[in-house]
Length: 165
Image (tube, rainbow, N blue to C red; front, side, top):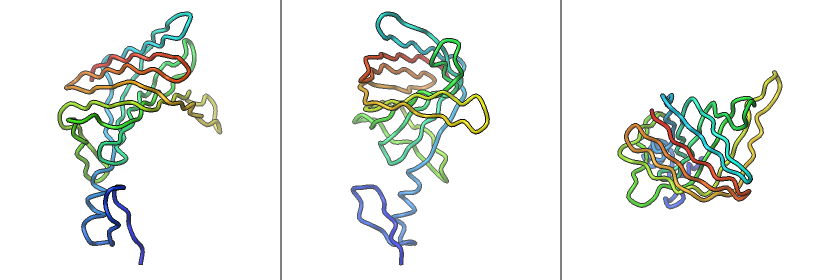
């Protein structure tokens, strides 16, 4: 007999007991194209502005999220990639409501960022996107149709995101 584990704070549940179903309903993804996206990366000695095409939120557990900017121009003239901010929801923010791995935000989401990663999308077949991850500090908010992030990575880069869904 296999045990299915729910969130870390929950006791293990037996299949069919309902607890595992509730844990699975708390996991999923929400993705939208962006009408407008402005990414600004500040790293001494200067700053570079670019854009992105979409946003994706992945909820691994209630309150634990990653925010992924898709089609992000991480380097001027370089291939599009992804910029990922991960962390926990701030007190007062509600987790996304999920069903069958599809989620939707309910109310404002305020994410306290603790890690970030970025990658370029491979240009040729057989290439792989290697994420460059690091610790980070900052905050992202999704309120209505507006997304904003202010994050500083351990490498000294500051990222600002302003986007509209």
